[in-house]
Image (tube, rainbow, N blue to C red):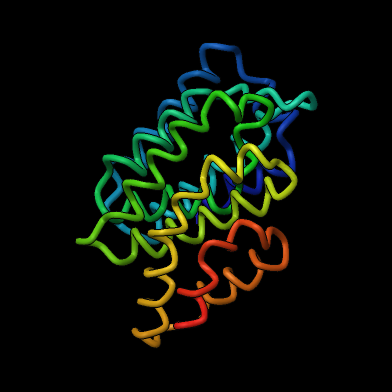
Length: 202
């Protein structure tokens, strides 16, 4: 409950809450949030903490698109790449929910984004990680549907993406990934062009 209230406070009263802290306390506050996520073992509470830091990161993206919390971006990369399977899933879901968090510095992070997604899509030991990586990739491509260079850069990841979509259908858990692919086909059809035949076989 406390995490939910904190998120609400950051969302509704950011100016009165965060900006009233002295710079040293702002730094400490952000640092403690990230440390708490890493040490929290209860899945539900850990995700609520991810929601808190996501909201704070949103607020720290200024009007010019500058991300004022680069430590959060590094934390997100590290969590998705080298965290426990559970933290990887939470980090990927966070990225999928806010793919624009890199702001106007996105081009500087493209290599890192691709590297992390590629690693997670190839994680044969953990289906939830692969599943969430597909959702995050699709969310990122849809956000950048008009950026041809970005779509081209990530195009090779579709080779790993489609088998995971097929796997999700075979598991009969839900049709979320299939709906994501449909959404992708409507927003960035060219991104799926080389996968038409595999898609027809699903």
